[in-house]
Length: 379
Length: 76
Image (spheres, each protein chain N blue to C red):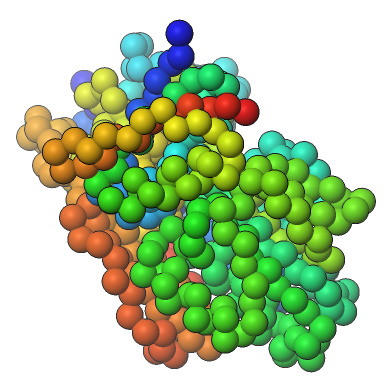
């Protein structure tokens, strides 16, 4: 009887899991003892970190995309047919086209989405770079911008913990290169009482911001934006004026997770070590989709995926789990147009970023290309 | 009767217990409580500081073995 593995979501997490399982179970796939199916929402795979460069014209849009079918091992079945219901009791998923896929093992990797619609005025008044359409609009706005108050506004929760700082440094460099830096005042807002969630990163950032005259407002959680008056107001009763507003909007998980009662806000309840959906023995959750208190980052998805691949392969071939996820996260930090650093940690090891260097910046630029090898399970 | 949701943020470095609280409190109803478990003693200071600024309500802070249990009521 063919063991069916269904992966819901064709983003980074889903793609790495699918390809990793195809590699570890290649013999079983060949003999039809195992089938792997990926159900995605699009036929294009996007390299999301590349979006950071789009507003500044520093990446060609075509370099952000690859054909998803070609990203996946040829023995994986792939359909662009979003899942609308996951049924843990019947061990099946139902798609928008009405098809049903039964599973022995399921991996839910439905990611996170922007919810600027949840803050009054934000969609109309703000720019963002977290999706291609937003990044393009931001590029146009930056082309026309001749100087003024720039507010970079960060909301919780969001994916890519580092992007808030990266965008500030890149905006500053962009204004400098454009010759309007002396006409610009950048104010950065952050939800908690320091400049970044990671204390060592926050401590590194403060003198950098002070050196560059970047202002900041901490304990700022956006309540509303007034696009006419060009003001942004926080739940903590602070109002800032802006000429250009760049936001990292709050995120939620996918609707299918809430509709399937796997968790609240689209975040599926997940055991932080086994990565199983709480109460399940055969549904794994991977990437942004989990409700684990951990960074929503590509590297988290990658390390979680590696654990899930080993566990499902082990369950199929040996009837047991292989190992636990240790909470590892590894993120690059671009600190300007020509320098970078990185930070890593796990459940037991706190983060300790090193000083920025040009070498790490160049390695990050290389990773923009190497990413495609990661997604294909080759790196 | 107020519902209680628990967020186990022990060993969470990023985004950390306060950010997890801020994200989770958006998903509960006004009048319900969130309990954050944190192994970072800084949470016992930064969570009450935020709660006061944003005008939610501190229900209690307890040190339990190797971590803190911090309960907040959503007021708006």
